[in-house]
Length: 250
Image 1 (cartoon, one colour):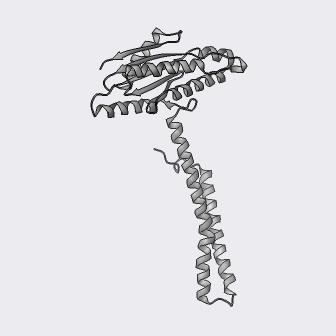
Image 2 (cartoon, helix red, strand yellow):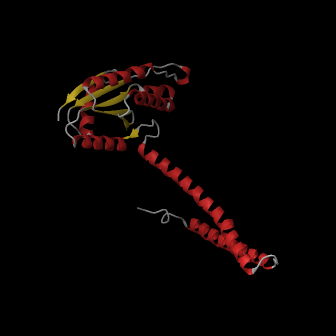
Image 3 (tube, one colour):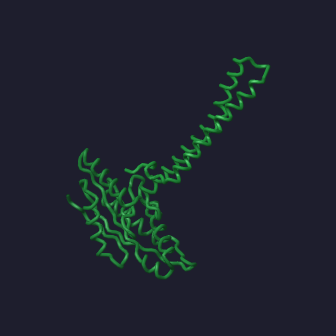
C-alpha cells in the first residue's frame, strides 16, 4: 500500500521544508528576544527570569501548536468518516453498495447458521420505466426516481433488514428470519408505497412502478444463490410490475 508520504510531490516536500525552517527560525527568535528583554529587568532575579522563560515559551509556542494539531485531527477524522461512508454506501441512493451489501448478507447468513438453521427471505427489486424517464425528462430525473424508490424501500422494511443497490437500477433486500407471510407483506408494502409516491418531473406527475422477485429459505444461503433465484423470477413480471415469491431449498 502506498503511504501518503510516498505519494507526496517535490513541491509538497519543498513547502514542508520551508515551513519547518521558518517555524524553527521564528521560535528561535522568540526565545532569544524574550530572554534579551528579561535580561534588563531589574525586578527579577536570574531564577525568576528562567522561570518566566520556562513558563511563557511553552504557552506561547505549545498552545497554538497543540490547538492546530487538535483541529487537524478533527478534520482528519471527518475525512475518514466521509471516506468510510463513501466506501460503504451508494452515493446516489444512500443504500449499501453492492460490495458491502453482499459481504454483510454472507456474514449474517454464516453467523446465523452457526447456531442452527435459520429462515429468511431475499427480495430483488427492479424499478420499471427508468429508461423511459431518462429519455423523456433527462438523466437527472431518472436519478431522482431511483432516490425516491430507494428511500421508499428503506422506510418500508424492518430495522434489522438490509437494503443495497446491487445494480444500476436494481435493489436487493435481505430479510433475516422472515417468514413467507412477512416477505409477502413487506414486498407488497414496498410496491404499494412506491406506486403512491409523488413524482412529478418538470411539473408533470408520473407514476413509479417496480417489479419484485423474492425467495424464502429455511437454511442459510450465500448471496449469489439467493440473488440468482430471486432475479430469475423477475422474468415472469418483466415489463409489467408485479411480485413473485418462491421457496428456495438448500
